Image 1 (cartoon, helix red, strand yellow):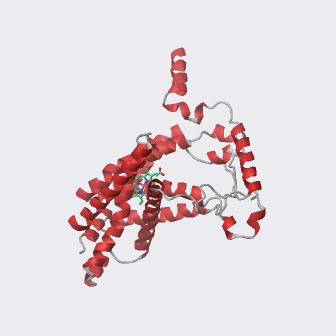
Image 2: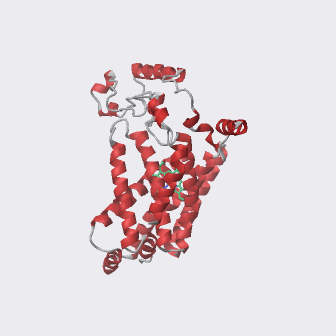
Image 3: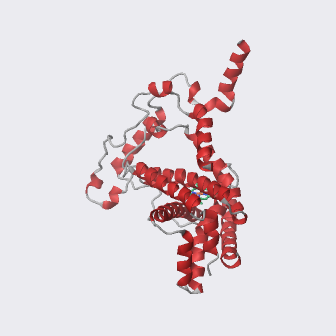
Length: 171
Length: 170
Ligand code: HEM
């Protein structure tokens, strides 16, 4: 519940400021949703036989539109949000060593989730997007299931902070 | 009215909202000279069949790149691990204390428990402590090569101490 409220507050507060206005996206028809799959892949002569060549950087350079992508925020704002989140986790994670309760469960899960959700998405962009264009969608589904699992664990089981304590008391 | 306009304009120009696209009057050009240059560079790379950079098979092993790689590897491992465990527990019918009791009933030898605790503790401790180093770099602190090495050795020692403290102390 705390998580849902937090999320809702976030989307309310930042949407107006950060959402790309409609007029802007309409002035860039076709650029807002770059279709990666429809781009032709350049084939070099060396690519035709070896697996090694498959791992070569095949698609590029990315156009400015492709780099901008279809996002709610401009990249630098997103980058700042991610850093602020990481810095707050520096306090949240040690705090969980001392306090275990449902609020800390939700705080830890939400902050850690959003950190790794975005961070792994960037890793996928670095390594896999150019080979497996649908990989981001796969990650969104898995991450959402994982987040649902975490929330369910906090609501209907012992909660993450208690669970870590129980696990660590094994010897 | 005029004042409000001036205020709004200065907000858009210099302040918080400077980078927001609300204030972008014209759409950005769809290509740039930088892009054209990159395109030439890429076609040259293809023509000469150049390998990826860095050329991993001949690239020297360094502490600095190694630590960055471990940061990324531990981050990925934790993200995949948390997601997998969370979905698995979501799907299983039991409650967490039951699994803990089950592990207790196995009477696992102490060395294996200690090894497992190191295995769980290392990624978190390392990523946390080295994460502070990464954040410092993000604010352009500690970029001199000598300091990158010093903080690197410091992180490795600190992680070893903290991790051992967690495994045996708490
Ligand atoms: C307080 C604790 C943490 C801090 C300060 C932190 C900090 C960071 C930073 C600064 C980066 C970006 C690295 C770069 O600039 O290349 C990063 C990446 C990442 N983090 Fe964390 N992190 C923390 C905890 C976690 C946890 C608990 C997880 C997973 C459950 C995680 C998963 C990741 C992943 C997957 C990446 C992407 C790997 C990369 O870009 O190299 N982090 N973290």
